[in-house]
Length: 320
Image (cartoon, rainbow, N blue to C red; front, side, top):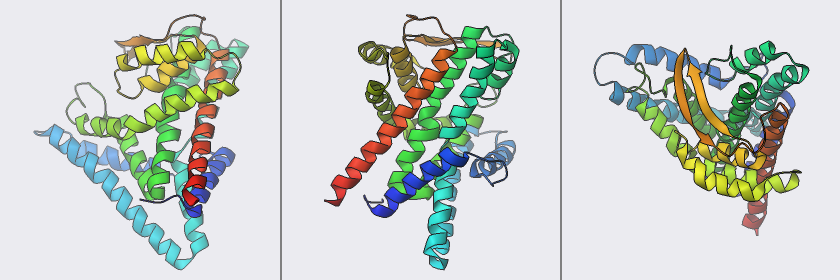
């Protein structure tokens, strides 16, 4: 475990800055793409025959452990060659585990056509970031899907990877991202993945348990810097509705966002023509409009900025 030291603080700050500046450019190699290819190959080989649940559990242990060990030894080698080279590569690797710029840009790509009245284009853009069918969604449902994605991924793509990077640098952040990618690919309760995806889904739930609740707290506290947020309402909504979410963690950032905005998330989603009913989170005090996408991004930004500020305060106290 890393202590509160200057090197860790420097890695975290520069990684966030790098992500804010360049995001995930296609011309740079990205570990998540590699994880996806490995997962796809193993899933095709293992997700058949008997003992699918056991095989899924084995993959859930094997993948993050391998990612952690390989990245740890790689960084040790790079640091041995050149300290500056090691720092530079570790900053880049941590930056690949977070997606502040990517999440904001993806949400704004839905926002802009919605604002201009191009519902077909907004549906298309939403389809790039959610698994549900989007081709027939009305405007409020497009907004809901975007806000839910921003809220939930504030944990998965920002707070959790930073949390694990603070504890164990790039190796632990990458191991977390491997689990999160695995869950996003096989953690479904359908006929194909109900057994094989059990282990990955449970491990992802476990890893996000603390970060999700920290995230909700940061969203609420950070809302004091945003105008017209329903803070008292958000507390009651989160306590009441967060446990209703099918994920033990996803409900916390989504319910908090819904409460702060005075909107209702959840409802009917369609996946490949199959209807899925999700618990309603929050109360429909306001009709869903494109402006809520921008407000969700503000809540997202306030959460990670506050989380980072809190870490730096603890860093300062830890040095005393």
